[in-house]
Amino acid sequence: MLLKQLLVSAFLGCALLMLGITLRKPIYGVVGLIVEILLSFVSTIACFVFFFVGVVLLLALGDAQPVPRFTYRIAAIDGPLKGRQFELSEKQRKLTFGIENSDVLLPSYTTGVSRHHCHVELDQNRDPVLVDDNSRNGTFLMYPAPEKLVPGVPTQLREGAIFCLARKDVLFQINRISK
Image (cartoon, rainbow, N blue to C red; front, top):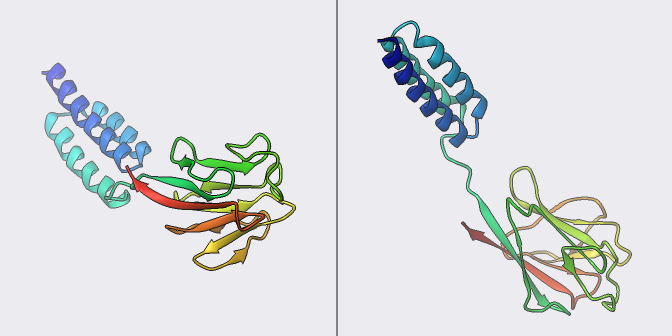
């Protein structure tokens, strides 16, 4: 009888653990698993009661909708890399641009582009931001509204945003790709 209770509580605890991971609240899932195993020594009914209470709590505490994951494609639309595409995703959360030791490596003859010119990264909300890395000739957001970036200050990039490095002919565009 105890083995049966232990198996039932382990199964229910694992279900709580998986729900916690899915809702990005894994610690609650781990606590649920531990409590379920401890309750197996009391009774099967207590395990089921705690399981349903745990599901309700996880749904109330957690975000019931899983956070969508997006990949962003940054395409060179003009300049020496025209036609090349680069991806920004959960795996590659930051892309650096420049003429030296960069993810998006421009030829050294690209006038006005610094060694470590700028970078695009995903912020804590998984939204892309563009940051000028104290480049000599600046980084500019061209679309939706033209503006020169303040070095070191993240600027939110919207769908279809176009930015340039130093000159108007070194252009990149960012688009979201659902995955």
